[in-house]
Length: 347
Length: 254
Image 1 (cartoon, helix red, strand yellow):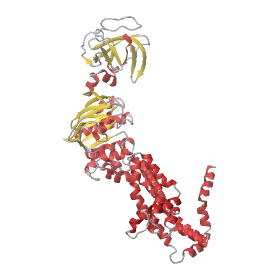
Image 2 (image 1 turned 180 degrees about the vertical axis):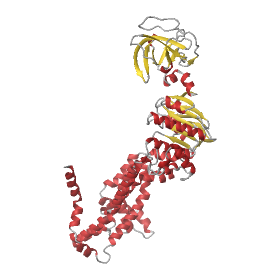
Image 3 (image 1 turned 45 degrees about the vertical axis):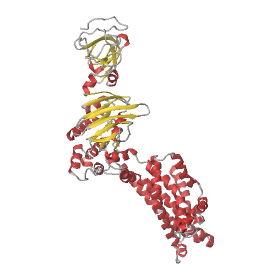
Image 4 (image 1 turned 120 degrees about the horizontal axis):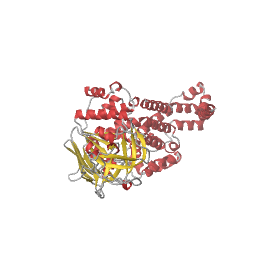
């Protein structure tokens, strides 16, 4: 069990974050670059001193700034940190790297078993430079697991690798930390990476935790508009009848046609369209200068054509940016700036 | 074309060594070195050089590490201090050492209690060699430590090693090729130390002073065999360090 509630001063802002991760739980810290995610990890690892706060791990207090003060040094914390650079010791063989922490023996059955599970069993006597990038990451992960650390901190470890390898390694980490009941925290600036890993998602921006929740809940029900922006809502359309209220439009949560019972019906002119994977991405110019982007399975019409779509159960935000309840029901279609006014129920 | 150009420069640089070898005959080497005590300057040089290396390693390695890690306030001031003794001509260092550790100084009086003296003794020779070679070692060792990725040291700490163990298990092995090169350069400087030595440690004779006095007393030809001895003695360590360091780097690169 990891509990951290800290304030860390940085040059540009103060990171204020409180997180709790239970045994076998996987928390992803998601946010833009420079949001303070890595700072939070380094504080837990004891590499950065917080201005104030409390960090507890597996029943031990690692940091407490209030009296009686505690500051356990990094080498006594039993915290595993994995970064983008696997950080294998180049002067030691893979076996000696794996067995670096004193918790394990060089020839232990655990080492051999884990090396096989990681797919590096044949490379134990090689030097790290002989290994591919993916294999080096497997070895680095094995080294942390063999050190029997009480929490695994992953600082965008696989962001330099290609998507397939990234997915393979992520599922490997998920399997191993679940088997061993180790709490794990992943820092990610790609939402897909965070979702593939986590059973809980925390969104950080400028040092503050904006929302923590189940990965799908955070994406489908962002607590504030900023979270919606960060998790991929590309457009915000005014909601008719509710002044100052906007609905977040996620490109993946839009279907063609008017289905008023399922969400917000929008009609607009096609400003641009382009292929996106196996689907098509359309920028739709709607009322009040709102531009929404939708990903549709069918090829849209030409630019300037009128198109009606439905944003499925969109999250809505009041004038202050916080979420307001969305009442399913017939929504007003919105006037198009240059096109014919189409006010009225969609379907 | 570039090979020829390179070869010309290379041969020109090796010129003194080639000249030395062409001007020596086996007979002249034997006749110059074949008398009782002829090789005692060699022994003196080897012993003082070895002691110098130990002193440098023990005293200057921590300093180099601190300089490389930026753990000292005003790092430029410290670096400038190290470079000072590099910039002073060895002869001047020798003169100043007399005023610093000679008789009638605080240090001189202190060690006089133990019947030691820091002029014209083995101790004086070591002091002179340390001052002449220390900056070369510190600068080289600092570069060696700077080349160690701090993330690796951090990782070792997170895996449970306290700082001293991190140093022994990660920092030192990774810096070792560079450190050995720095030691080899310091060794060559210590072997050839002359300027400071002639002022403060005229006795006991090491090889450079032996070459100088032989030159003064009996001429060029009889000094040359000692030059060969100096070369043969000073060279193996740097060569071995170079080969070992290249092999260690190669092994890590894979």
